[in-house]
Image (tube, rainbow over all chains, first blue to last red; front, top):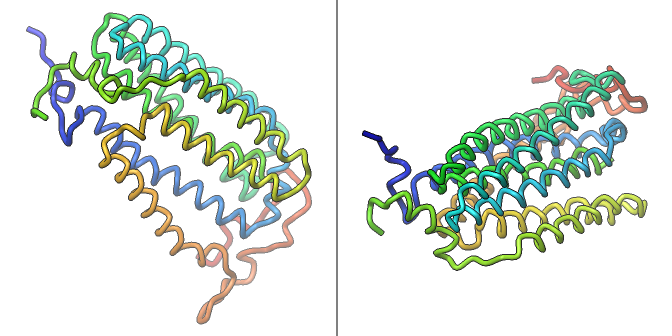
Length: 191
Length: 137
């Protein structure tokens, strides 16, 4: 006898509980990322000299990673569209493409950080670098978590099961994209 | 709405139920063009232009992603309220904290010498800013 998880079969406040839960997760994430970003902005305004430290970040790498995340958001929303049409295998393929985008983002980040660290810019090199590694590190952790969850959702979608989860994981992924949209100008453009 | 729904109803019920038909590739194209503008902005060498192209465009891009990809515009109003309340509370909290971070002294207090050493400027790399985490907490 198969057992159905109650969260997938119940609605609350006019929407499935799974989707409601994702939005609640994002509410808490607003406080996490919003706290880091606003705290950075306050310190940055109080320390004009951080602009000189920020000059060492590579604009083109940041821009490329922004393009990668925007594109991965496109594949995530197309996966949602496919799931709505009941096409699980296509949704799964698009989710795997999104995971590929996340992997590309992390690989680029790894090379970028390696270069910066070998040039002496570590998390202890100053206020800017502390924020840089903390904010980008927390964000990268969220990218990795999203990729793992997405693989799990895609495996179900391949079998046309639990397709509502495609939208849920997509909402999370778009939020992670939005966080990077703000991190990019803060860490790579404002110099 | 009934307390229980089937999983298949959830599968097809959300955006389809709202009648959402969007050209996602066109939206992505606009986002990429906006990204290109934000990258080009600093090359103008004008601070105001850089600020607008960097942060103004970031706001527009975030709005577009939230509206078109997360479908926040057709989501239940309670969700939009949840997001707005979280944002407002966060901004309120940090507005209250901002004087501690951004000001060196107030009416009845003053930060210790060395809390914000503005002199730590000029070179990159390890040890270029000794101010972070300085005494005074």
